[in-house]
Image 1 (cartoon, rainbow, N blue to C red):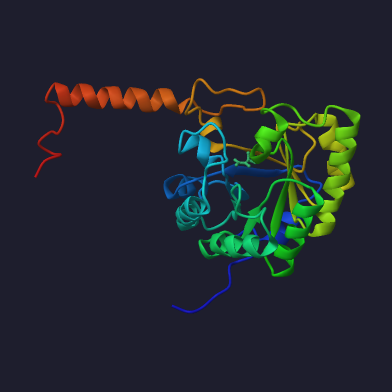
Image 2 (spheres, helix red, strand yellow):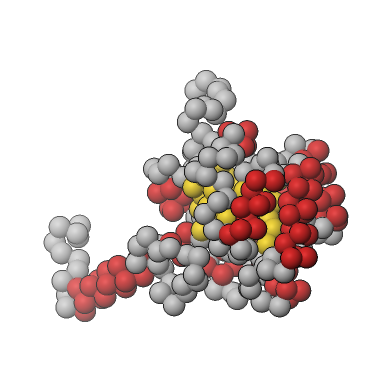
Length: 272
Ligand code: KIV
């Protein structure tokens, strides 16, 4: 087999994603395993995030805080195995980048070795911006994340709308500009008023990707399990369900159980 570089026309690199600024067409999604990644790979999705929301949807935890770098590495490796086109971004979990730039570089390198092409970190404080700058300096593309930053849930006091007060909105607007200056190639805006997201999107020259941030961001992201309706109890206002898979899966399992209990499975054709 001959060596080759990824085909820029078929795959989404960081520069290609950056060129999508201003079009409002970036469709992005989270993913945690190879089976779903293979399905995503057959669609026009342009960017996939291995989110630390794995803590919630995979591990059944009520915050993203306990997920570890080793767990994120395994999920990243699994998603990378099924993906060939979309840009693969991996979340840096809580505690894996905050202590120092050195620790952040060590842990981001593990995610890149597992197949990520970029990492995402939460927050816009001077300390976080310094760490972002160092990651970018050594060649690791970084996606920023402002607004509702779930890793700060205890400081914020819950999963509420952020940037409602003028002072908070001003701070977020200025932090978005400073994240761009620090080298972020894009910024996630989570659960903020649509008007503020529109202001931030106009103010920065890198793509913004919204979740609960209205229609004026350069792109949108949602948690895969939420749009597929895998948890009928969980339906925040910003989620649109494109399928009701919990029902489909439950019915399939009920039919299977029925067939086994009535001796209808396996049949002769399904036996050796
Ligand atoms: O972890 C995650 O899924 C995220 C997205 C919601 C942006 O950070």
